[in-house]
Amino acid sequence: MDKEGGVSVDDCAEISKKIDDLIDIKVPIPFRYSLEVSSPGLDRPLRTEKDFQRFCGHRARIRTREPLEGRRNFTGRIARCVDGIVDLEDERGAIQRVAVTAIEKARLIVEI
Image (cartoon, rainbow, N blue to C red; front, top):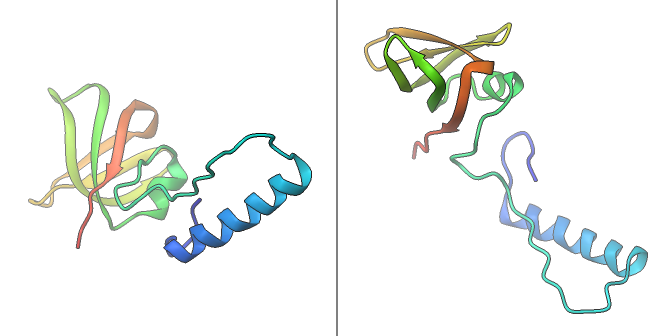
């Protein structure tokens, strides 16, 4: 599950209880089962343009499908994401522009 502002353990417990109750009523399962509800986590994957827009200002690690300027791995702060292009600002302030469609894998970097 996911929601604006993040997911707490209490949120997961509440949803788990509701789903468990619905399963018991609507689709009785004749054997023991374990229902697990979780969030994408602090280092959640970023897959869509909307994900990059939502986490603008956060640090991320991006791996592209094909090399850009001889590299496939980029780390920096998401400066913006407009029209399917992510602007990733590195620690020197340089911007790397990456098309969302060119991204193989992207994750937020945990900052505590």
